[in-house]
Length: 135
Image 1 (cartoon, rainbow, N blue to C red):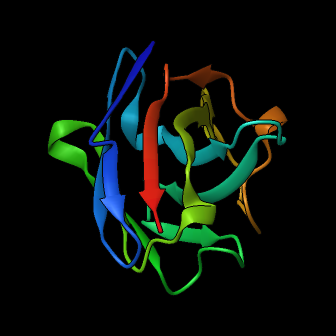
Image 2: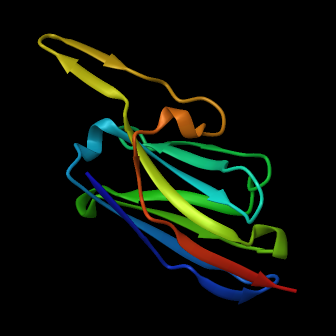
Image 3: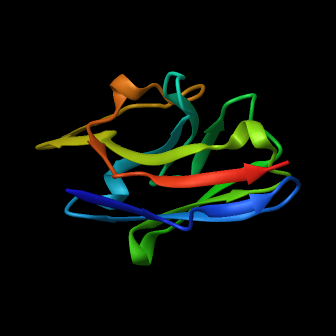
């Protein structure tokens, strides 16, 4: 499994960026993908997640209304559109994946995601992309 983030960079406060997370090696439709960030000296923070099967999203309060997550199933890629960025959004941004639909013969078990993502829920991680917002 590989996840590759791209789209990071430097923007002034109030600006926008769109991050991409290209996945390979996993059953995309059975997965949930999440975005996390880690600022210098701080713990990793879960920002948003998307259940690929139905497009259901969850967001942390810190980004709700400013960040939007979406997926392109044909490209096995998810996106994070970020608007109204401020210096507190400066961090390394990571995407991560977990399998939420497990098929066992005739039975299917689906995990329903609720609330912002937690790092321990995710098995596969990208290398991260730096986002820097200047004041």
